[in-house]
Image 1: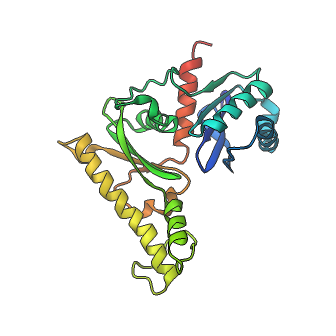
Image 2 (image 1 turned 90 degrees about the horizontal axis):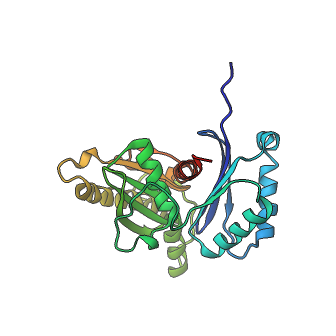
Image 3 (image 1 turned 30 degrees about the vertical axis):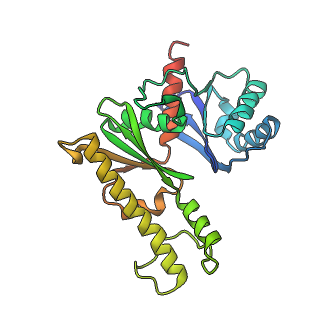
Length: 270
């Protein structure tokens, strides 16, 4: 007998640079796409883009969507996404993560409302998949370090310039330094400008991650820092994670898994 199909959920994570979309069949990711985040794109344009992506999937075309879950760190895009979902997918149960939505996570910071919803989704997924205490390192426009307690609470974190931001800043501020391809050099000591830049960026970020994770783990679990699990996610993570010994797992869909879990929590009784 074949596996029983699960609900078809479209999860959308709108980041500052990219928007990542995936379709879950139950717990399994069956489709995924990454597009540029455009803060001036209208709800109608978003609908056309989404229809084009979904039309590529025979599975979605055959079964349709059972739900939509969305989080965004870009307020203008969140507004248009909300409009798009209501106008074009009004018959589909939808969850937009914002204050007041049941996530199951306590946010133990000075101002919980200022914490990005993507970081809360990472916390939900990391605690569910790996337990706590844990640290999520999310490689995006910024490199986010999310600290999760043994109880699965979001207790704070650290924010650093992302890899691409660092490259852009170097190329703009130093006339002789070109914007280079982000790839691992063969050695730390570069023999030319491109290799030297690649070394400084890739190994520099790796050293930054190791240092922050080590200090954060000591604060999360003073008696046993080694018990803190470290999970990497984000589109740029594969560039660096092989250079960081302290990373325990790589989960590219962590934020989207968090969206699925929160959708299930809020629509469980439906």
